[in-house]
Image 1 (cartoon, rainbow, N blue to C red):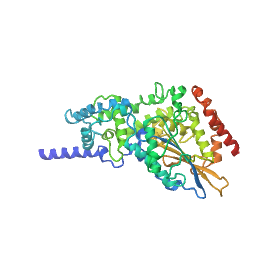
Image 2 (tube, rainbow, N blue to C red):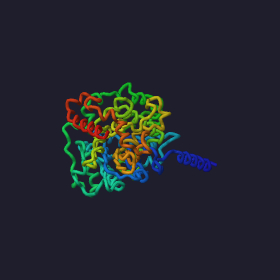
Image 3 (tube, helix red, strand yellow):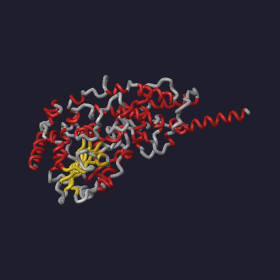
Image 4 (cartoon, rainbow, N blue to C red):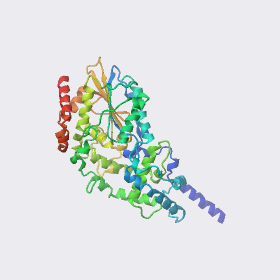
Length: 464
């Protein structure tokens, strides 16, 4: 009888373990698609471009590309904090195997627990290489170049010509190396291509560096929707559930954030493997963490503040000027950062929700359009392809792509936009003086942009 009872208890324990979520066994791992700005590009990139790039009766002529850098290493603060995870690793193992504080429900499965036990921080990642592009990041860029070249071989020839191509990147290692990876993807050799000089005041690719109005917005401080959400019942419950899942009675939010950050980085560094720290989080918990990130970016770079729609004036003007011009360069590619890309999308009205994201409407915003995991992963890219359509009444058209998905704008025909409608839709921002349109603090260093504004005005005038 005693033996039978022990067998029954063992079976019950085994059955309970089988019910616990196991990241190491999950072949789908949906939460890896919800890592906000640290999502791996390979996981969320579009897969339907085969059907979207062809425009019957039209020939692609020009291309304008705004590319976020590929997967990078962490910030200095995260690198310094990362060894703390070895202490947490040992504490979690002790909780499960010595203190026996493993929870009755939603415990770590044996595979995930063992993986955490074997984890060590890569000590070669030091502060002196903070935010550097990783090998995966280089491949991200090489891959996107090769893919767009596959679909647009006539627009993206494999032989480099410095008048046909214009490349430019910001003054960082990760964007410099991203440009090289992209160039290697196009030409087979990164060294054959050159990038334009970086201006002393880079108002096109780093406008936020010169605008106190933009930097001083309260998008994540006290009273912000981000902070309100982080004191909400759903947030507190999520933090408590994660703490309990790891066998603790108390766990600092900073420790949970560190585990989540390293999970996201490691998953993006090696997309073909699993990060052991991702096993800490249940899929529904990642959904809560993602929403907090989305709130931060929504008010920092998105539609949370209406003035954000005016901020990236110069990038919109540059795109329209470059695509409007009949002369070279025929391909313009910029390599920059998430804030620049997000504010560009905001200026263009892409993925704008009818209802604002707030701390109190998490439950009803599961299908929101503003999801930074989809909008701005590592290596995110926004591409405008200009077509000439000789037999059409509207001879000039454009398709916009975001991460290899055709952008659906309600004033375009299933992703195909008339160029005249583009000029009409963005008329206000195209005619604006960008020095005055949003941030006057940048005006003293931005007068050179008046030349671009004048060019835009001349082009628009000649086309009408």
